[in-house]
Image (cartoon, rainbow, N blue to C red):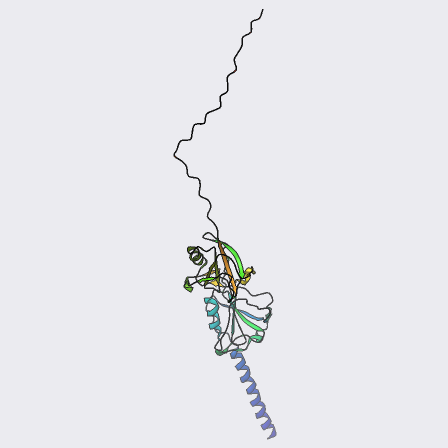
Amino acid sequence: MRLSTFSTATFGFAALLVAEARSIERRTTVPALHAPWTAQGCHTDSLGSRTLIGKFGSDPKMTIPTCLKICDDAGYSFAGLEFSTECHCGYSIEKTGKKADDAKCHSPCGGNADQPCGGSGHILIFGNGRAPPTNPGTVDGWKSHGCHTDAVHQRALPLRLPLNGTAVTIPACAAACGSFGFKFAGLEYTDECWCGNAVGNGHKPAPEAECNMACQGNKDQRCGGPDRISIYETTPPPPPPPVPSDKPKPYAKKPYKPKKKAYAYKHD
């Protein structure tokens, strides 16, 4: 009887372990991904040195498809989920993020306990193969003045133009600022257009990588970032070519030079 009781208890405990294992396995199952997204595995991450540098958001109802859509709509190449509710986007996987065991990224998503959403200090990454946006250098007579720092209460450029977010591109912002006679045009946080005649409030150049958000109207170009503004400066047009004149050129008189006389000499 004791053996039977022991066997029953053992069987029940084993069944509990199997059920728990299946539960963990179910929670760490990545759903079918829509092309071109592919899984890039689990990586280490930290607050001081992010593995994906770009847009960030947190939602208690986070799921893998939700995060992928957020990063895809913003024009990013990579999406990563961490700590059940966090979604990170970036154009590249930073070298500080090291590949880790997938078991480290098994925390259930806040919006779907059957999906893994990273872990503590670990981020589950997906990629879509999209090339990162670039700084075109020169656009329609406006030359890049580089990435600069900015702040909400002390703006680098003073005037914001109310352009429609979906229409914000570098050429559109530059043309709008130019129509008001401004020398500088700046783009920030993907859909903001700013104008001014000087970079003010002590703002300085910043690394180009910190202007890391794609333009809302053109995902192939960079439009600043959080507290970072991509600035362009108008270049003066070249001087016009000289206009040919129809008037005849004035006659230039040559200076008079007397001719030398030839003398004949008589010989005796």
